[in-house]
Image (cartoon, rainbow, N blue to C red; front, side, top):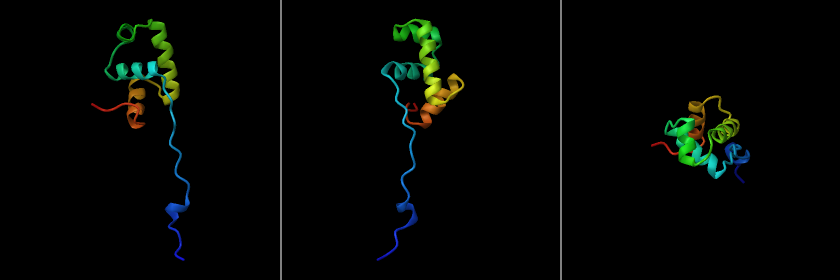
Length: 83
């Protein structure tokens, strides 16, 4: 019997599982298009305060500290497609 290669005996690395709501996904896509909070509010038919709430949640889920960082993290995690 041949030994099993080391890379097959280790469990697979955990991939972070980030679940976004449909509205968070919509806002993230608009954020990636460089929309302002006001523009996001109009496009998503919600208030600016609600946009800020969703952005706060997105920043937390993506472990991001800025809008640009959130988009960058989303691209790295495959939550956004680069265009």
